[in-house]
Length: 119
Image 1: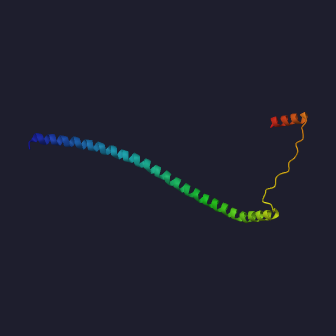
Image 2: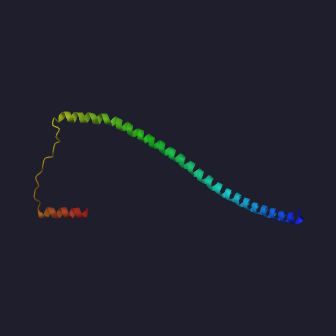
Image 3: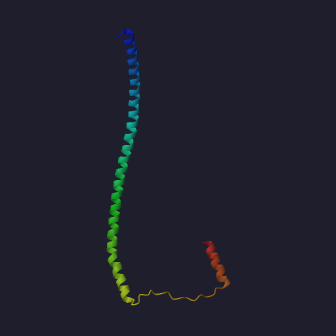
């Protein structure tokens, strides 16, 4: 090989090495910044997971208390319903007695309107 070819090859290798160092420095900076950001996101996610675990535990405890309360109240409700059904032989529900409407005087109507407007 000629010495000119060696010189051109050394210059090309030197330029490539400089470019590689620049790229590696940029990659290191990017990885440093991105890894720190990812670590923060992971830490936040871990905290959220722990909080959700606690919340799920609380929700389970509340659900168990509700089930226990319903279980304790259900026999009482069933017993009351049984005594009511025995007391009423007809299956037809009782209707409320109708109260006849009394005509109101104009003074009563005015008083009612004033009371309603004040509320």
